[in-house]
Figure 1 (spheres, helix red, strand yellow):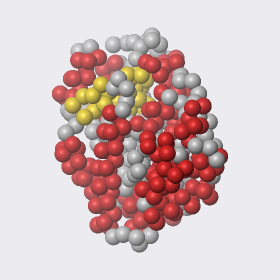
Figure 2 (cartoon, rainbow, N blue to C red; figure 1 turned 60 degrees about the vertical axis):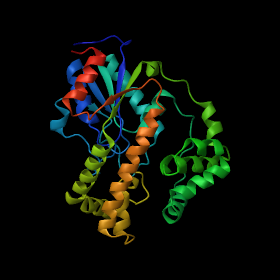
Figure 3 (cartoon, rainbow, N blue to C red; figure 1 turned 120 degrees about the vertical axis):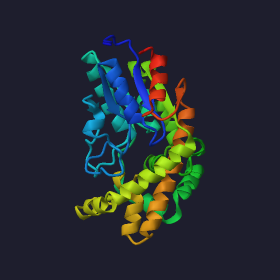
Length: 314
């Protein structure tokens, strides 16, 4: 099947972590015949961090083009706005070749930012970020949310207390600019032309089965050398407060290496973190307007058949 019109849909395959998005995304690209995948995962963008990222292998890619994957230095605190800019360029490039973009990943904020561009945000103040990160490590993510409630109630009401990357960024914006993020967001740029053509499909596997896979996968990451990977990154100068080492698994290993928890605790806390993240992903995508939910894991034939039927790709 070879679709070339720029009026064709752009597909987005999203859902909770470990739900099989990579597998069904690749199969969709193969079914279409001219699909190209754009990574929509905030951890898989980083080079040099591998073990706990679930980046697709060459075998899993099955020869289909993949973009915005494994291309940002871990020292860079890459933002959702940065990704949206890069994704927009890739979408236009892919469509200029007559091919079909397929966004695949679980970072709902990335997808939302692509469809509804953010305002022009101030550059990160590294010293302020370090102070807030230290405060978060000492008193917990919920403490930052309480600060945000005091300075910007509207933003705080829209963010989960434990969603510390976005909570912390909202706090940073206020203290850098003196303006509320909720008010600055009213100055958004216009949405790109293709935004209305993005068709969102959300995978919905059974939660108990999903959590079991999450627990096993997190344990496997540690068995496969996650601690050693983090040691090497830190030895070459990567700081614990970077976005790359603040992601699930990596953050807890850093705490273990700083002597703040045992290895067993790091594993258990990582498993809990990722389960909680999956819960937040479910909640986030429930707010995604016009999204189509598909029961099952993306690597299951029955789930893929449901998608083919919806898209009339039989």
